[in-house]
Amino acid sequence: MPAPAADPEATRPAFRRAAELAARSGLAELSMGMTADFEVAVEEGATLIRVGTALFGPRPARRPGSGGAAPAAEPSSQGSGP
Image (cartoon, rainbow, N blue to C red; front, side):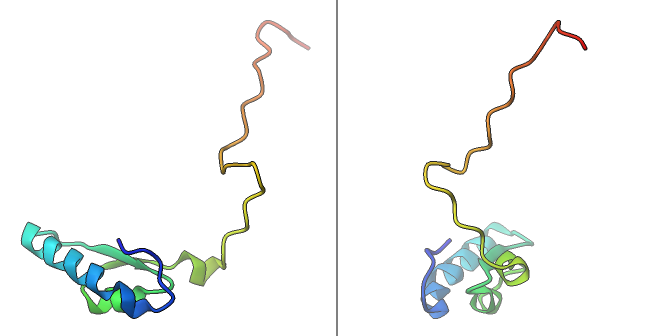
């Protein structure tokens, strides 16, 4: 899919090409477009869109060094009881 762009129209060529490929491949569904460019995606043939930012707002900034990974699991305490 296209890189994010300040102008949603800049995404049109990529969406058009994806729609052409989907049609040629006989795909019934085409998921493309997000909050910033979904109108263009629908105009170019999207049947599914992602609008999470419109519904929930922007994602919180990641803390430096977090890397987005889940925290490590606590070590197991096998064999120890209350």
